[in-house]
Image 1 (cartoon, rainbow, N blue to C red):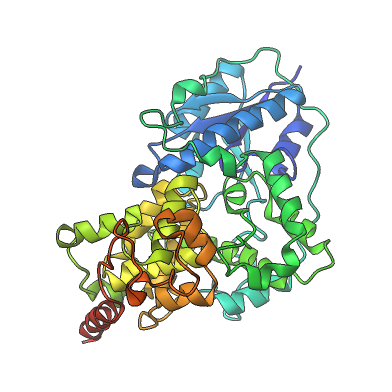
Image 2 (cartoon, rainbow, N blue to C red):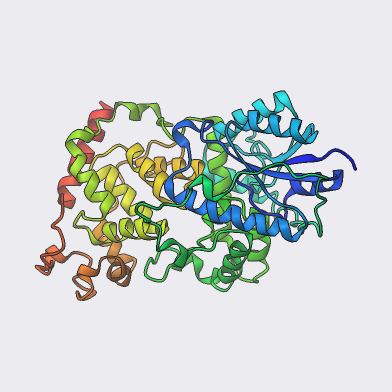
Length: 458
């Protein structure tokens, strides 16, 4: 039997359309390995909600591998050191994996490549960064021309099925126990509601895609209506690589319905990864340097407001519903994410980075590229962003996007209010005593934000 090769799993936890697996399986015996490396990301180590998802996704991946005659080896530590040590144990010299573009993964790939024969494959995005370029040969910084350029290369190649069988090595190396990693919360278990909403793993991802195909025709309008949850809910599956974007593209476009609006969201995901490739500190530094002069409120002064926002006690029902949904399910409707983020940044004048860190810890789809680019889009500090002076009005947004039933579900104190009063109970003298008054008026928050912006502009 030939020497085994290592298959390095990261945010690509699937067997289908997995170029690294297909190549490794063609070479001989394969040892699939996942390394839990909390050292490389430093402050961007996975948050609590992501760890819940990871536990269940790894369990599903191991079951899928065992059905193919293989298994998943779990190790913890520095990726390069762990993989080098494992290679020596089993007599392997080659490692296959997919490219990843977060700054810590790029550094880890360089480190692994210095000690082992590392072959990286594409498959995490529709197109690898750099596949489309401007007329001058540079990378795109603005989304719209980037999207046009990507569409010229679509559709992506058809996804490949999983191999029928994966050859096992003569002897399996030792593996950590998934339970010993304590990825699941216990004291307290704040994720009790997650399992009702999510089924991590490749099978669950494919079911979500199939369910969404029936609704893709309604997506352009329904995606903005939180009461009917018209979004695809595929982002955590895409982040953990349980399906490839190529698989999603082809399944959605096979529906014979106009899916262009949704496809542009898949392209936005590629765009976000291109941005972090050009600016690795996108998650912690303003992409537009002028925003370094913006005078955010000191968090010591704004602590109570920040706590009210995190716990869904701002007095703005649409914001509070979103923040409570986030805590209960690890998820928030996309339109509400924008409203909640805008409220923190502009009404409360709290630095976008504090909100981004909270989402990083509480979202099951926490993704460095998407999270960073989306927060900076709302803040106006991104390379391609909304204007800071465009301040979302949460009360009118709530009414416009028919959020009454959404509020009733997540803010039960307001469940008995009518559609006419539930968006702004204070304005109708209908606020129950159990629900807080607004922590700041809309006009007051707007004027404070605009004053800070004028000061920044000098």
